[in-house]
Amino acid sequence: LRITKGLLLSKNVDFIPKRTIVDLDIDYFESITDAGKEKKEIDRLTNIMMHADIITIATSPGFISGKRAIRLAKELLKD
Image (cartoon, rainbow, N blue to C red; front, side):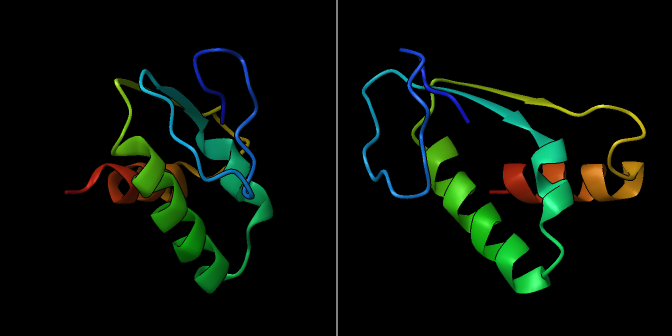
C-alpha cells in the first residue's frame, strides 16, 4: 500500500495525508489464510480507503483465485 509521496504505509502508521492515492494489489491477501486476520485487514484497508482521493485495485491472474479476488474487491469497496 503506497501513498502519494511514495511513503510506505505500514500497519503501525496511523496517519492519513490530505491527498491520498491507495494502490492496492489484491494478491497481497494470498499470504493471509486466517479468516479473522483477513477480516481485520479488510477493515484496516477500508478505513484508509475512506480517506483516499484515488483508489486503484489490481490483481495478477492465476496468483490468487479469481473468485477470492472478486470477493475481496467487493468487500473492500462495499459501503
